Amino acid sequence: SQQGEEDPQALSIQEGENATMNCSYKTSINNLQWYRQNSGRGLVHLILIRSNEREKHSGRLRVTLDTSKKSSSLLITASRAADTASYFCATSGGYQKVTFGTGTKLQVIP
Amino acid sequence: NAGVTQTPKFQVLKTGQSMTLQCAQDMNHEYMSWYRQDPGMGLRLIHYSVGAGITDQGEVPNGYNVSRSTTEDFPLRLLSAAPSQTSVYFCASTREGSDNEQFFGPGTRLTVL
Image: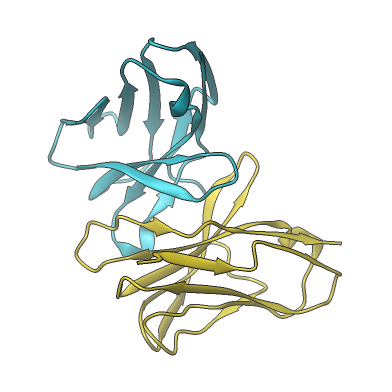
């Protein structure tokens, strides 16, 4: 069964707006990662947050992690049309336990 | 570096046929994995390997075999294809000690008729 569940399943915003997507998971983790998948392509690693971290930034990306609520959020600020993609969270409790959520499909309208 | 490469990009099989999906990486990563991606299901782990000669089952291993004779290559074999194996297959590699950051190949889209 999937460890992570993303919310919302789909999101449509105007260029320049911020996009927020959420991930909830079920068991304890070592870290949580976010990946992007452009249509017809493989997944690309965006950012990783460890279980002892609460917030992390990378360029226009901001990730938060709340281990007490078993949830994470990914914020993309000042979105661009090129951000249109599906975004997946992945939780890791050890190598064999890297599991992916079902993804959020983001559309950024120019 | 080519990263993670997969062949073929597309494949159509008839039920009962066998085939091997190829995966290779040139980053000298110790860990390699195979996932399948189905609509609304995210990615599910089929098999993985922590080094040459070592493989183990993931979440959905039935109907698939793997072997890891070299660090670079990790082929996935379908012995007798079934329509339920219609999916997009992704190979990924990870460097040991990297917090499991996965590098993905471009995928193989498989249709079983």
